[in-house]
Image: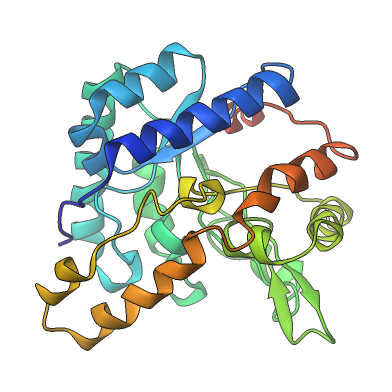
Length: 265
C-alpha cells in the first residue's frame, strides 16, 4: 500500500494554469485529459473541481502512485474502487479512463487489464514495443482481446539501430529534440495507432516547484530514497522550457482531437 503524497498545492495550481492557458491559446480552447490519483483527489478536491468546470476530462491514475505489477488483483481491484470514488467525490464525475502509474503493467501481467475492465471504459497503460514483438503477437493477447475495454497504447519508436525506444512524453519529451518527438508521432500514425503526448507538471515547470528537501529524505532509512534526491535535478529547468515549443512544433503536423474519452464515443 502506498503512502499519501506530500504535494505542493501551489505548484499543482501553477502547473494547471499554464497547461490550461496553452489549451486556450494554442489548441483553440480544445480540452485535454488529466490523469489523477485518488489521493490527489482527496487532498485537493478544489483543483479537480476547477479542471472539470473548465471542461477538461478527469481520468484515473490509480489511488496511490504504486507499481501495479507488484500487487495482487484483489489489491488492484480495491485501489481502483477507492480511486474512482475519490475522484467522483471531488468533482462529481465518474472517470471513464485509466492509466497506470509509470505504465507499470508489463507483458507478463496483462491479467491486470481484466480488473481494469471492471471499472473503466478505456485504458492507456500499455507500452507496445514493436522492436520486441509484432503487432500480431500483441493483438492476440490482453488488453487488445478484451470485450469492453478500449486500449490506447503508448508506442515508442526505436532509434539508434533499435537500441533505444523513445516515448512521446515525460522525460523523453524534455530531453530529445522536437524533430525526434515528431518522428515518434509519425511512427504511431504509420503503425495505425493514435499518437499520444503525455506529461507531468514537473516536465514544464522550471523553478523547483516540486522540489523535496533533503530533510524529508533523511526520514527514510532506504538508500534508494537518497538516490532519488539528486534525481530531482531533472525537474529544475533541464530542458523543461523546451516542452511547450515542442508541442507547438508537433501541432504544425497533428491536430489535437480533444479528451481521450471522445475517442470512444
